[in-house]
Length: 53
Image 1 (cartoon, rainbow, N blue to C red):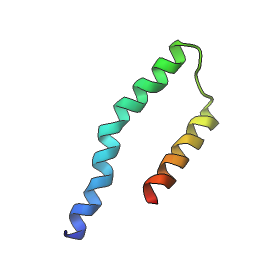
Image 2: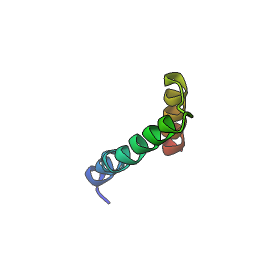
Image 3: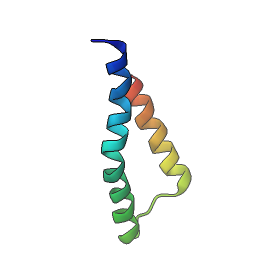
Image 4: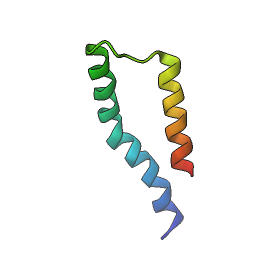
């Protein structure tokens, strides 16, 4: 597989999954279980680390 194709996989997943995570945060906010901004950043960093692994 050419390196150029592997470089496009990550952005495709980001664009595809961003609406799902945005909807998740909105739904949690409506139920009163909204996470703080630092907690959201922590989850994002954990997911990013897992994707690198």
